[in-house]
Image (tube, rainbow, N blue to C red; front, side, top):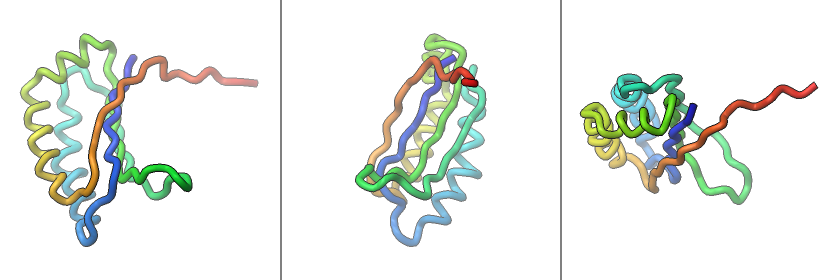
Length: 111
């Protein structure tokens, strides 16, 4: 399994906090759930970061069974729709967003 994480580094513009969160929850998150092969969609609105860390407003994660499955999802029409809506919502955001891909997400239990 691999995970694609979107990191929204920056801040929501003052006065738009509630609207931004609502639009993400009601309009964008449903699209993320439609990506081919995607599972375990997670959305995190960040309340605090460590001192000295860059401001992170939001993170979103979707799991995929393989890089090939991720490539198929990124080539799908639903990704085009999600990307267009993301760009629209960025009007309420100051900063940048980017993605990281990670694998080997299991953590072994220790005794």
